[in-house]
Amino acid sequence: MGVVVKELSLRLDQCLLRFMDELESLEEKRDSLNSLIEQGWFSISKARYSMGNKQVSALQYGSEMEPGVRVHVSPRHTGETHFHTQRTEHLKLDQSERDSAQVEDIGPKEGVRRRGVTKEGDPKEQPASHAHVSKETSPPSRGTPQQQDPLKWFGILVPQSLKQAQVCFRKVMELAAEVATLQTAVLATRAELQALMAEKHAALKQETLPSQADEQVDRQTDMGHTETRLTEDRTT
Amino acid sequence: MAGRGKLIAVIGDEDTCTGFLLGGVGELNKNRKPNFLVVEKDTSITEIEETFKSFLSRDDIGIILINQFIAEMIRHAIDAHMQSIPAVLEIPSKEHPYDASKDSILRRAKGMFSAEDFR
Image (cartoon, rainbow over all chains, first blue to last red; front, side):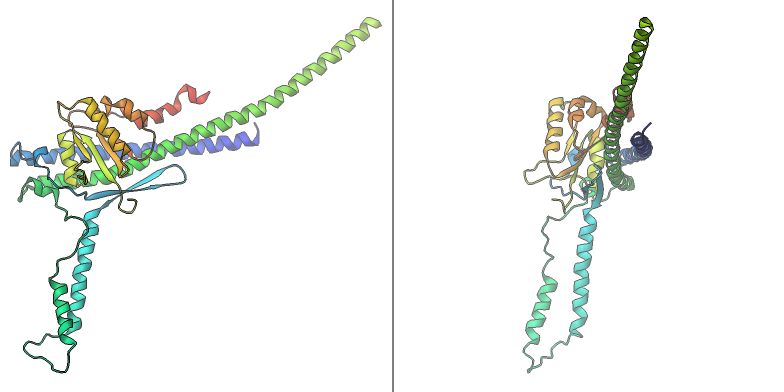
């Protein structure tokens, strides 16, 4: 066996081991995803039992929907695609926290507010305080419509089991992204394995062809030798 | 679009859709087109297939979650989808547990060890 074929075989083995590892972790993730979905359904059923049969159904879905989860997709050079979920509510919370932090920062700079005392020689004070008030009273501007918690579609005071179902399905979405990543990894590794296999077959063919040609040449020379011997024998 | 991230679409029975919408995947876009389909007894296979294909053609969808028993109805369409985005994930439903031997991705991976690959 040539060096090229040996190297290819080694790479094939490594690739196959990686493929098996990926399949194993895919199966594990699948199992946990399936059990989480089942937990979610169980919680929905419990909520339905306590709220009434028709209280948790498609009829209660909101008329306006804004996604609370988004998936970030990043293709990699190996052919795999990485999926990662991100809760958009977190982003909005961060934004509102930043807004509130801004208000808190602005407040102390002005110092203690004095009522009824106006400085005659300080014309800049009044417009500044006006600006401050307008900043405080103006509602926070948002580019997107305000997101409503889907729990509120089903009522104001929803049972705890419905909240548990929500938590379960949020976890399911995170797992779904991981499963999707693994699925693409499995397919990419499979394609790599097939390519390596084809490469190895080609290398093997190339190795066997010259040796066959050599054998044929050897046979022909052997035949030539025997023929000359035979003619020599006949002449003698 | 890349900065904002993509959506998760759902094709499933009522409980599956309710669960995922509760989790916050639901979106109604400007044309009031949802990113989910609640499959009921009277939903036709054509409707399911059309919705699935419309999800495939939308560039704002990253993952499509579909109940396996519904995936079985439109298996040819799922098998024909070879791109990695959007990723299609088959999930169990209340009445039908997940069967790995029916999963498109795992069947493709299993095909790795068929006799044709070793020729």
